[in-house]
Structure formats: structure tokens, C-alpha cells
Image 1: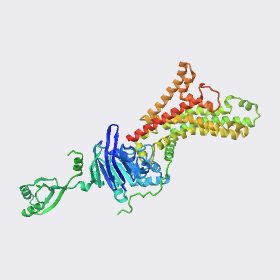
Image 2 (image 1 turned 90 degrees about the vertical axis):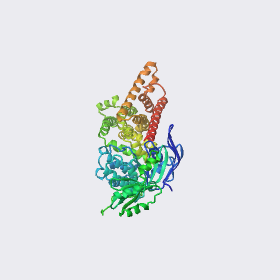
Image 3 (image 1 turned 135 degrees about the vertical axis):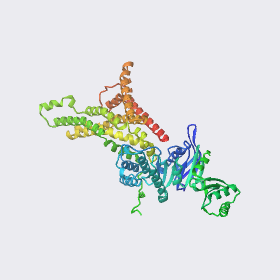
Image 4 (image 1 turned 180 degrees about the horizontal axis):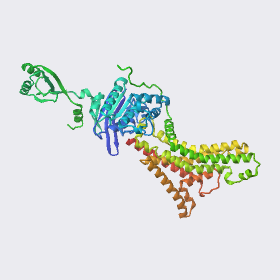
Length: 304
Length: 291
């Protein structure tokens, strides 16, 4: 059974169409939701949470139809919103216990879970402080913890690394990755930061102007380019370079000293090795250059 | 290799169903009773109750056993009399305190959730809008009941304990029902009005001022309009007077406010409550969509 299933979902705010016939399925793993501002990412998440009723189409989570069975679906999901969202007058333990109770946990269970989850997200030392004293990064961790407190099967994360310092960002991404790999949690991560998505996700959905314009596994989307290679030879690099230029290749020296070589379409890649042999040298590094996620994204939204 | 792996355990408990609003009520009460100013306000409320306890004790002790002329004279002082008017007056006086306490407790209840963006966190849990509104309203109703229905009913019980007998019971058996109904008329519009204001304004200060100004304006209009049109029935547009009119009927008191049938006052109070509920629900629905 698909965890998330959308069929021709259309959502509009008055005359503005926010989602136009969105169809997608998420079976598991970590899926990155990418798109420029106003593309419809947040609307998609709100539709999945049952906050917004779709004008047309069908949406379901864990087989529960939305928004009719939204409460059953919400029992199984955790949501981390983009904006700062923490109760200021209470401590983190109290807030998380309350969140656990709202999920229907007994107070003692909820409190136990609150402590565990706060330790897990690295907030164990500050858990009794009132949340109004927390930094942005700490609030971010609390938002993450409240989404985890009831052990959800699906996590909807909206910009989870906002406001985090580089170290905190890496820690957060590692936690998300661990949830996916070790605990089998399905993650739908909405982010503007492509490296975050690349670090955590194995699939991605690119949404633009309310439509899904590209989807698939990140590995498949960032395929090797046909005629572009990164090459390093052991010695005689200059003569090798001249020989390649003579063979019709276009070259560029990268900051690490390697050569970025674009070969003519009809040229067989074996020629690189033959030329090296002819120049009395060895090829030490030979990697087909892959499409970067940024390129895939820009191409998908029509800005390349 | 680390001696332990930092992780958390899987939760395999069965979640309790329903009554999510009760979780909200408990949390709100926990926060309120953790606020010093709120506790001080409750202590102020105890002063009036203590006076009534003293009044009932003295009156009943005199009625039952005393033959001392001084105490017998005390029994005839109108202020020390204990009858249905005593319990009605208690609620009437407490109603101002209910307003202040509700304003203090409720003016920030919803706007602070908006400010802290907690609405989307709450509604991402299995919580409905009805649960949310019910949770907040019941919290304020309980706080109101703590100042009205509960102590007033206890005063009736005290009166029956100090002057036991069929006579007292016959005179007072119906009073708890009247107390309950009149308390509801005081507390419900107050709670819903404060919550609606809290939902409509961005800060608790503005919400509090708005409720205060509306009530002040409403009372002023309720006093001025009957004079202008020379018809006392127009006093009904003043919410405190409408509540008072219902109270007079419930406690079988002589009509002092205005001659219009009490049913109109009850209808007016009901309409105010319904309007507040509508404002509250539509604002929260909008916030849910826009979160």
C-alpha cells in the first residue's frame, strides 16, 4: 500500500490555482519536495495534513482518504512546520508531553517519550528551560522532536534546517537520514536547499506552478552526461592536453588540476586512453561527469 | 565503538481515542495555575466568599440556637438575612470578578497560539477545530464556575448543614439549579466573548481592551437608549442587564431591571454566544488554512 497517494489533486485559493492535477505516489524512503517559492509545496503539505480540501481529485495517506479520514491519517504522521512554532511559557518537556497527550498517549507515556525524544535531538540539557529562552536552532530541534514524539510512520518536514548553524544542519540531516535508514520512517522533505535534499533523499519531486514537473530517484535524474569527462593523467599533462585538442575535444582545467573534457559526439572514449599511451603517460582519473541536482532542478522549472 | 547508541524506543501503546479537548483543558489549567497573578485573583475571589460563609454561619447559628437579644437583632438586619436573594447577590457580585479573571485568563489563549504559530502544530495532531474551541472554552467555563457555581452551591450546602431540617431543604432545594443556570448565563458569554476577541486580535492586550470597550459601550448604550426613547425595555441590549433579568427570574426576585419577558433576555444571551462561536470557528478555520 502506498503511504502517500495523490490523484489529479487540484487546489485553488479563490481564482488562484495552487495545485493543478498533481498525481504522485510515495511508497517509502525519503522524498525531497523541491520547487521555487509559490510553487505549491506548502499547499501540497497542507492538503496531506487535511487542512485544505482539494477541489478535485483524490488524496490519501496510509489508505485513509483526505480530508474525511484526516484524523486517522494524522495519528500516523509527524509534521514539522517551517515557521517557528513553540509554546513560549512552558518547558520543552512540558510541551512535548502535551503534544504526546494530544496524540492520545497517556500522560506518563508521553512524558517518558518526551525525555527520550529530547535526548535524541540533542536537547537533553535544556529540556526544563522555558522555550522563550531558546535560540532559533533549539526551536528547530523542538519542532522536530514534537513531530517524533508519537513514533510516526511518516514525517512531513518543511525546511527542517532553517536557522541552523552548519554543524547543527549536518546533525539534523543525519538524524533524518537515520530515521529513514534505521527506523524505516518515510520522510517527505520540503526544502529550498538542494544539498539537503541530495544528502537525505533518494527520490525527489519537483513542483512548479502547481504541477509536478519532474519526479524520480535522484540517482536516475542525475545521470552521467554523455560527452563530459573529468580526467587526470600521471605526467605530461600539457602534451596530453594539446593532443586532445587536436582530436577535437574542448578542455577546461578544474581548480583541483583535473581536466574537464567535452568530446565530440562521434569520438569513442577509448581514444582518451590511446592518446595517453601515445604520449607515454597513464590515465589516473577518469570519471563521467554527472548532471548536478541544481541543473536538473533548473531544467525542470524551465530556467537553464 | 560507542557504548550505547543514542536513539529512542518505538512506541507500541494504543492511543486513547476522543476527549482531546480534555487534554487541552488540563494543559491550559496547568499553565493558568502556574501564573502567580491568576492565583492572586482567585484569592481575591475568596474574600467575598469568606464574607458569605460568615454571614450564613452567623445567621444559621442565631436561627437555630441563640436566645441572646443582640444576636436576635442581628438576624433582622437585612444584610445578614439568608434566603434566595443571598445566593443571587453572591453571583451578581462575583460576575464582575468573573469578567476580570476571564479577561486575564482568556485574552491571550488563542492569539498567543497564533503568534507562536502553534495552530498548525496542534492541527497536525488528531485534533479537530471543535476539540480546540471546546478545550479553550471549557477551561474558561471551569475557571468561571470556580468563582460562581461551585462556591455558591457550597454556600447552599453549608446553609443546609448549619440549619438542618425539612424547612431549610424545602426552601433551598431548587436554588442549586438556579445557581447553575445563572452561572452559565454569566460565564458562557463572557468566556466566548473573550475567546472570540482573542481570536480576532493579534495581541492579548488588544483583545482584552477590545472586550472591555465593547462591554463598557454596551452597558452605556443599555443605560442611555431607554432614556432616549423613553422605553425601559431597550435596556435588553445591555448584556449585563439581560443577564440580570434572567437571574431575577431564576431566583424568583422582584423585577427591577426592565419589564420585558425574561425569554427575550435569554434569547439575546444565546445570540451573543452563537455570534462569538461563529467568529471563533471561522477565524480558526482561516488560520488553519493560512498556517
